[in-house]
Image (cartoon, rainbow, N blue to C red; front, side, top):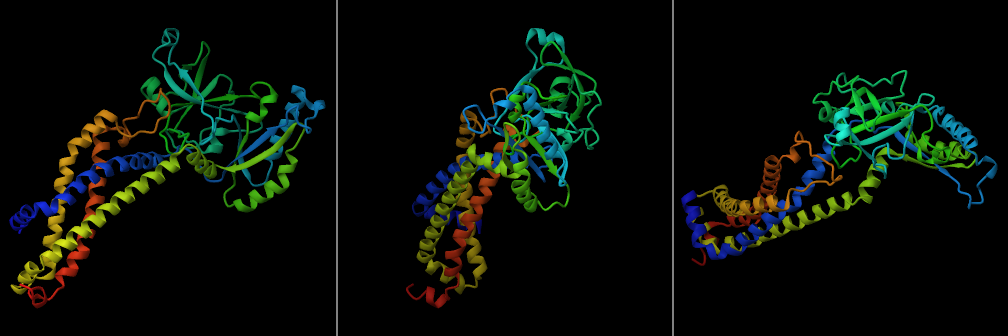
Length: 436
């Protein structure tokens, strides 16, 4: 059968020419539009390193002197600090709150801010200003039970359990597994020293890799702890509260009650309740604001357009070919060929056309990937891709997108071929041979 099919394709090479060219173009185009979808989806599938369920951010605003609500009698640092502590106490004492954290405004996932630092493993590299690892940093205030690691659900890399804060937090930090590996070559880094300046910090614990953005990859992370407000209390609005609700709490009822009853209680002194935001909502909002959502929508739309072109092209081509070969189909049916045999022959023809076109376009895809680079989510100029993730390995990345593209094209091509061919194969031999 294969020899007959190859002979048939060669004899009808002119008729097959335009669909073959379309398959060449669409094969190249489809790979390029599926590549970003694969990377973004693969990045999103990476473990976040925290549990977002039941997490909310309580944002506190501060009136300025030009606003009529500004109270000059409470403008001193001490008065503002007292007011901020009262607000913190009200938030943490809500019956639905299990745990909480006073976190800097860049220190929770999908926030609009991002801060980085240079971390050294020893003083020799510090003084030479080389050999450092660029790291993102979080900080929080260990006030009245504020605990970022417990609130976020960050886990110890060795045991998988919750991380406990040391009794003495001054001069101690927590680091991510990725940062520990790049600094020391091992995740067993508790008790070791790290340097961001001349003052050393002791590693109090190592947590699992942590993602700041859902569609990005984990970045080396260091978490600082402070006993009280870092900087002027005028900057307290830069330290929102992150709260985790108790298991079983009706979140809709909590949001409604918090906004209607608790929000007004948080307007103390020159501070006021600004918003209550859910972690999952912040993730969607950042994806939209950063263009990731629109990027995915565009890629899906382009993929759909390419597949529609292939589908219509295959339907049109094989509709014409099956009508033109009605006599051939009639002869085959008259000598005992079944409908299934005829349909199989046409499907093999479509498969050979598609596979030949796809194989021919692979060198051009390799050249494009080598010259232009594979799609990657840009984080910053210091980002070092982790080879443990498949999307960061050139060979695997290229191959998996190639396979996905081929399988999608194959399915659409076979469906587009099957529809007109099965109709033609059902024609009775007498009807097919009437004009013979």
